[in-house]
Length: 357
Image (cartoon, rainbow, N blue to C red; front, side, top):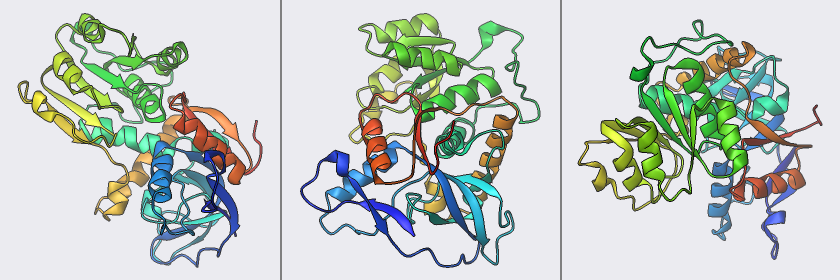
């Protein structure tokens, strides 16, 4: 089958990070695996981080296939599979310990796979699985924020609170990224939270408002803490942090005592001690943890993806796709990696096997 692998030919620049290759098609699925014919993928920061890690290792596996977002069709199911059958259209974020989605076919455990939304084309759907699972787990599993069930949500209104002065506050750091986009949408559509987003560029600020933020504060403002405190004088209840480095002091300043933070970045040497005075709690969100460690509740991600698909098809949640490339080959993946590595992406970039309107 066709696949895209890391280009280990020297010398080359970042515009030639990957090359096209022909590799063996995966074997017939065993146990609860599905064999999926891939129609579209998307690129996430984890792709660029793992690429950078492998590039620094001269002995890295030349046959390793990256990629952790996909939409495709089930072409075969393992003997123990119960959730899907041949011909169904699915979406998933995959397993970081297995071969990825930069290929024609991929094996994936059905417990981390969902039924793709019927209202989205392949590219728009492919932009959603990893960020949706991450945002859902961060808000509702880690922080335990109360939210409307799928049946209670509507596409015209957000949940209401009788006394708006009692609305709790969520601060979103990294609002214009893929995960931040879903955090804001879930919080806006499924909770009564007041959402304060941090963004710097005009494009990012408008994007955060379009996703459902109530207020947007300039991340590079000299009086950032004061602006947040003006909007939330009693303190912020929760923080979603995509960029934690140099922000721990800010979080301690603007949060209520006993507040909770959930973070998705992998910064080291963070000064958590400063959070002790207010007894603030810190949670890590890593959506690959369930599959990597074969958690007993792996199927939770199947449930999340099916719920999100229904929210999309009901018009409640939208895809964060902003950039689209095709077909799935090395040139497209090289371009997408450069977009993500630039740090200026708003929303998500996806690559479809065929051009889509």
